[in-house]
Amino acid sequence: MKRNLLFAAALVVAGAVNAQETTPLKVTEGWTADVIAERSPVADYLVGGIDNGSVGFFTKTFYQNPDVSRGFTASRPQMSANNVIYDIDVTKLNTLQLHAELEGNAGRGSRIDGTLTFAAPVSTDKLYLLTSCGNGPASAIVEVVYESGYTDQVEITVADWYQGNDADSREGQGFYHMDRIDRNNENIESPAGGPIRFFDTQIDCDPSEPVVALNISLLEANQFKVLSIMGVSTGDEAVAVTEDSWTDDVFAEARPLNETATAGIDRSEWVVYVEGIDLAAEKTYNYGFPNDGVLVTTTGHTYNIDYANLNATRLTGAENTTTLKLQGQPKASTIYFLAAAGNGPAQIEVEYNYVDETSEVDVNSPFEVLDWCSNSDKFVYTTGRYYNGVSDVDWCGLFEFESYPDPARAIESITVTNVRGDEWSKGIIVGLSMDGEFTTGINKVESEAGKAESNSYNIAGQRVGKDFKGLVIRDCKKMLIK
Image (tube, rainbow, N blue to C red; front, top):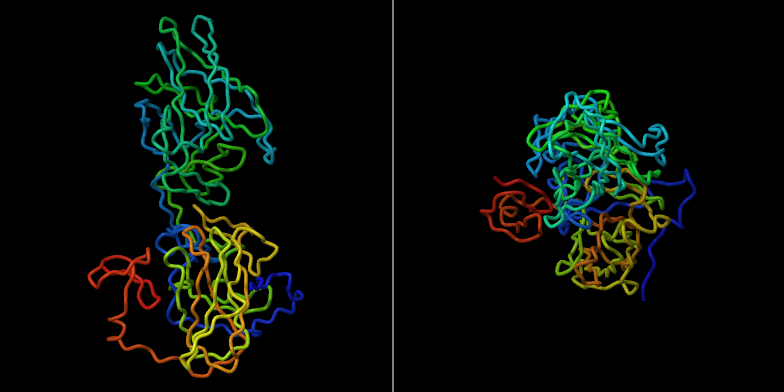
């Protein structure tokens, strides 16, 4: 028999939420994960995470100190992966952008053609344009203008800037493995490897005629595509163009980003940051977890969450079961589980282990827990997520299910199991709360000798020996052993 989640359909009337309606339970042993990051880089503050170790929740006040090694180099001149030399000044206008009126960004207007005027005539059999395209691919006609007045036309196609990070698809890519950043809110999107790429786009020329300009016209312009040209080269040498040829700056080299970069590379505000930029800051977000760790759901239930230590259990695959030891040996008529599922749903079986050494599985379990990024109408706490950067939007959240132990018996611990039992489904429990009372005071603190003999685990959940160096988990706490 399966019992449904306690959904937000049971919402209390606004203003009637009472933080004292339920009593939070403290887990003294059994937490195996940390799914809420209070700082970045989040790999140092998440253990396990929701879907993986770099994906989880975040606190409202979040200290951002990102890895900025995957930016564009400011060292001039710049050499591409194809040994093409450019000279890009990231501190001033450096890009010719061509686009129609953009959806959702009318302030950028429309410009479907432009001219790159050379500072001096150039004789060469080929030129290279450093190009990129938001919502690509995009095609354009490049008219090569010679000093004699003769012109020649070449059609080019530029692929999307956000594709092709694997080695087999780098043909023509001049710069790759870069991150992108929103110039308004400073959110970095930084998947493993870096998703952003620029291209060396070749233009054949008549070497007997010096080139003085390139006229470029966007084909099939629409409300999505943005074609950017950020540099010109003969291959061995950068070609200087007049400053009035450039229309925008797509490189953020300092803060405020919306002043040092003037336009996104696509129709939104994504730009490329310059390697080594200082982005450390304490920021406040709307959809983070409460800073004090006291979380009250829309159903009026209260949970206490410790961000500095392990604060959740992650039930998946071979690690699909754990036992949560409770402080205070409570007697409860109802226990509420604050939960979510990565790649859900998960199916959570609940077994109560009583102080009298008997155990009992809740006959209503397993309880279905939905995916943390779906069914938002059923969230009891709505939040954002950290996924390659803070996504401060209200489409992630937590669910509740309620379970009924024997109210006459004191509970020692609760064993929870994700009975789906596969590597895909991750059942996450973040907190427990109850209708009931404690039967003892605070459990006594272990002696230092006892702590020294506790098992230790690395962040992958594997048991390690006493000589292990690095980030370890011991007694539900994270510590760095040097």
